[in-house]
Length: 454
Image (tube, rainbow, N blue to C red):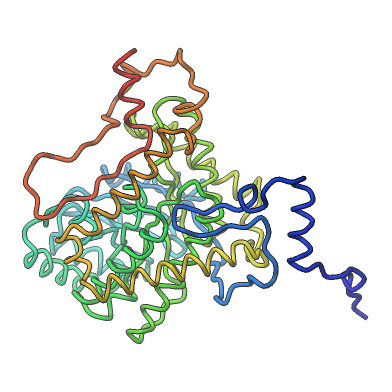
């Protein structure tokens, strides 16, 4: 006979918890000492009870994969690189193709593709190349995806590649040519987070962008769309954010008659809090962010190379980023728990609050204007700028801390002469159709001053 371990313990009411906290505060104000409000307007209390159990069902995939990028060289060389990564449990690979033809038999020689996700980033959509990829996917029953975001490219550059009409027609052709691909849109939600949008904006703007894809290319695109999400430093909020993406996209897709419960989510650490000074701290930051991505239910995690802000891609930093995830998987055993966030009333509360606020903003945007019109009017850009500026003010006032940048600086550290790439990207002066959104790190201004004074 089963024995209820907890039946001998009295239930403690929320009122009793609050009274005990007030007693322990010894006269200090309960609200100011224990409650706080996030930048998204979400009120956080010191404790949560079963009263806050989520009304939504959480979806956690059975497993999560480590992801890395392979830049296509000679097929035989890239084949060896792919096999090496697979031997180190990298089962999601982005293959960047910068030419018009590829020998796929040689590229995937002695590679078992049945359990891999392969994302192709293609610089030029040549029909012959697309047909080669599609036929290979059909014959080998692979999990091929296209790593492409037409609308994301428009909002991050401010221009279409050719023109609105031509780009739309080209992509319609791409969709038709890749009929055996699992997905053809990798919506870069990371554009919003990395530019300074808060979580509510990020989710709502991403849903608006996804909805625009449906308007442009029809309901069938719903099944061929996934999200790439940047994970920030607000740990529990970021865990809840991933579940909110799933909940809202299921709600929106259901309205079109294509309910997607298990949308594929690729997570990557944000660049907002990464630094060039004390750059080893980036390893700690990205580890925490990867852990939030895993617990939140991402399908694939593509880690941040800790020195990639100022240094060209190199094997050492790639190995470190890969090993961070291998440690989380094998030494922290995060992959052994079926649903690690089940039973957390705090996360349940956050999921419901973030979902409610994000969906309300999405509906507000949807009723006023479509995604492209919002960009044309500059509304989204202005809102993101305002959010980014608030965060920047907090950083400058040391309310938002980055150790090694605005607190506990190593003043003897020198970076001049170590920069292989420009860590301070700026908007190009060329004329654009819309104001593009620019990815911007919080520490950029401090770093510029330090470099100048070295």
